[in-house]
Length: 133
Image 1 (cartoon, rainbow, N blue to C red):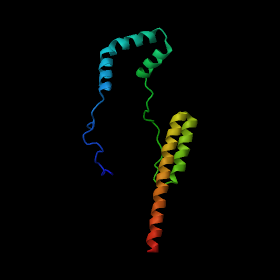
Image 2 (image 1 turned 30 degrees about the horizontal axis):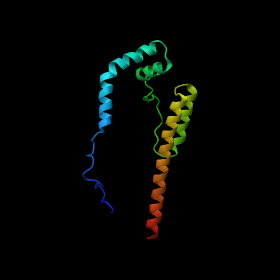
Image 3 (image 1 turned 180 degrees about the vertical axis):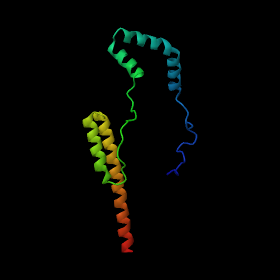
Image 4 (image 1 turned 90 degrees about the vertical axis):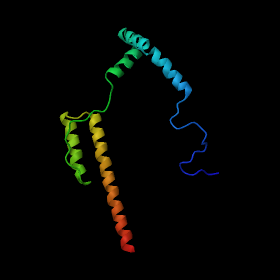
């Protein structure tokens, strides 16, 4: 029997958002032991234990994406991407961008160009279809 969209296969089942009892119990145990575990971890890191040191450093200095202070030229059409890519390459050559930042910016430009190209293609197909009617 097929269920309608949005209709549960088991209406008497676990309600949406209900949490597993094991997960709740594990979180409670961890909350109670968090302070001594943290002190032990910091102690091990202080003694030079590599895994403990890595865990502590990941918490102190997480590697997150940060905004890149780099100005790209305005990209309004696919043709503008050439200038944007040239700016990225020049920023990399000048040391204003790291290779990782340059690669991420290049992907943004590439995605934009693909989006514009898809929109243009869709518009051309629509015009062809309307012209045949």
